[in-house]
Amino acid sequence: MGVKVESPGGFVVVAEGVSEALVREASAKIEMVLRQGGVTAADIENLRVRYQELGESGVDIQRIGADDLKRYALDPNHVKANKAIFAVLNATRAKAPSGGVIGFRGS
Image (cartoon, rainbow, N blue to C red; front, side, top):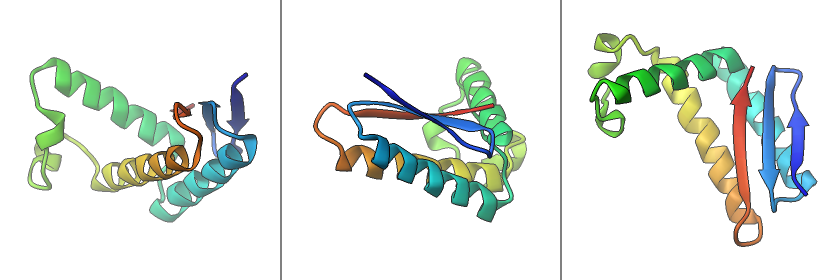
């Protein structure tokens, strides 16, 4: 059975094979990342859409550097927050039993 935690910040953390306590902890940490960065869940969701568009147009998203952000109309604060969110999710996944899955979905 999966776990779903909705945040007042407008995002949802969903997991399978991860305890509700860990999911709530991850949600609180993500909320802090967004608040500290002045970024909203919608900003992160828009960034992911932009990444998808760039990827479909042949841009190697993994190789985008600081110099490329302006050229591709990517806000550095959004990119930084997105990386921090993935770090939270990966750290949470590492605490869960093998096979646990956790994800973030913006509004």
